Image (cartoon, rainbow, N blue to C red; front, side, top):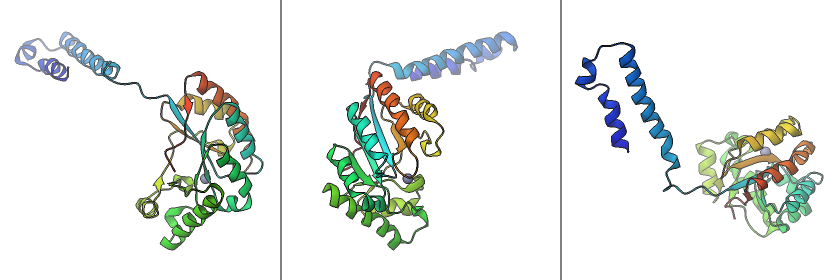
Length: 240
Ligand SMILES: [Zn+2]
């Protein structure tokens, strides 16, 4: 198919084509050939040889645990049979360890979002390590496992953060759908932004901690219900 397409485009510039009078007719011919080529390109992804991607979505919640909002998120996830990955802040785990236990006990994944939410790019090596390992220790004490995924606060990543994470045995995990729920744009906006942007394999960033998350909680039922009706399943990120 590729060679056919290239040949037909090339023929526009062949000696015979060049002999034709220049002008609208030649332009129309060239345009028609290009459109045919473009159509062929567009048709390629629909080829039956390509398997459809699994309809999986990864919901993630940052900045918890929160004694107020995390239990509400957990109740809604349970209602819809959904699992999610929680990137928790170490000092919040220290303050509300029983909430972290509940997240884990209900089948969700608890991962590392640093101790106090700094921009990890700005830290010395020892401060970076302390931010990560002190959070690991608090999470491990409640879940029995050491997180294998690190989500740097603000998504702020550079080569030092990546190599530091790797040195500590961590995979950096960002996201692909950000409804900016932290800015509290309203329940409807959070719903719309998530539902408009989710495609198979999407990693959705939302927040269960770090402030008033009532809008996120209010948006969750429609997000869960609608994605489920579209055939999505809610999976854990491939972290330990
Ligand atoms: Zn955060």
